[in-house]
Amino acid sequence: MSIFNYREQPGYFKRMKDAFQVTAQDINHQLSRLTGTAESPITEEQIEDLEETLLGADMGVQTTEHLLGKIREATAGDRFITRQQVKRLIRRELLQILGESEGPLDRALSRKDLSVVFVVGVNGVGKTTTIGKLARLYQGEGKKVLFSASDTFRAAAVEQLEIWGERTQSPVIKQSPGADPAAVLFDAIAAGRARAADIVIVDTAGRIHTKSNLMQELEKMSRVASREIEDGPHEVFLVLDATTGQNGLVQAREFLRSSGVTGLIVTKLDGTAKGGILIAIARELHIPIRYIGVGEKVEDLLVFDPEAYIDTLLQIGDQDR
Ligand code: GDP
Image (cartoon, rainbow, N blue to C red; front, side, top):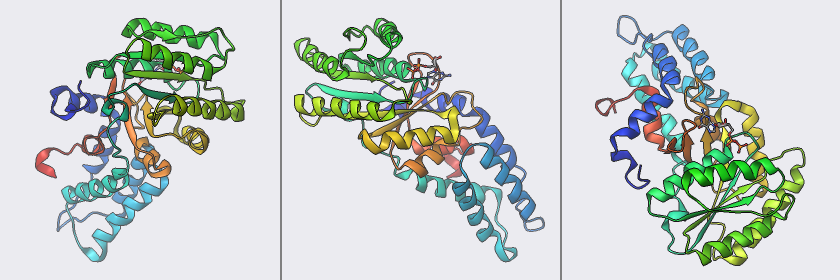
């Protein structure tokens, strides 16, 4: 999949549909129960049923209440609106929330010189897998990728990264366990230059029990990146696990406070009934969602497109907009 024309590729919408199938089914099942004719206008009871479904999809209380308020407004005073109009109304409101989410294209791709991409997040969210997927995506754009094993805290982290290094044929720059993560980064940047690589993807530690150390460590790495390369780090992607709901949002705020996050990557969206979480994330964190993880394989990373996402959730086709 090319990052630049992902929408034109036939597989993109199909893969979005597959990933959000359960959530879309739940929402549309409920929407299909809205009557919305002159003889039988939408009732308060129907609106309340919709509330349960939107909350169940993890869209968040604020967004759900906002949407219901808009529907109530539109149906007030015995005015009748159709199911199609309700869908369009929801689409418009959700697009407004996600609008901010449409960030600039991955900066690591628009540079000619070596770029540095940090990948941060709590252990277990899918960070290492995402690094492998990102490498594959970048390679698809003709970029030469190299990994910096800067989670020196866990020996297993380096081993995991090496597995993804092999899978994607990306060299891994490492030191012994316990080494200074910033020193590994320094080496990786030097190696990147020496080998004429395009992008250094940096794995970072994700232990939360020593949070302040972790944040200091990330800040130190940022300083090294900016000292060694103009405008570095070029992207700092925070990886969030879609299945952790509100907990994930709390963790995210910790990272946002100190690590200069430029974009979010939300993983494990495949098969979940909670696919509305992206709306809650966008609404609460105000950081663009850049990619989404829709499976465990190396190709299971999609560019996040707010419009395609909303249309998938609401099962809206070209003719319905
Ligand atoms: P890390 O500790 O953050 O580096 O997490 P890992 O990359 O080791 O991933 C933790 C688990 O999540 C592994 O079993 C991965 O296969 C799984 N995983 C990662 N991303 C996705 C995804 O998008 N979908 C699914 N279903 N599983 C994922």
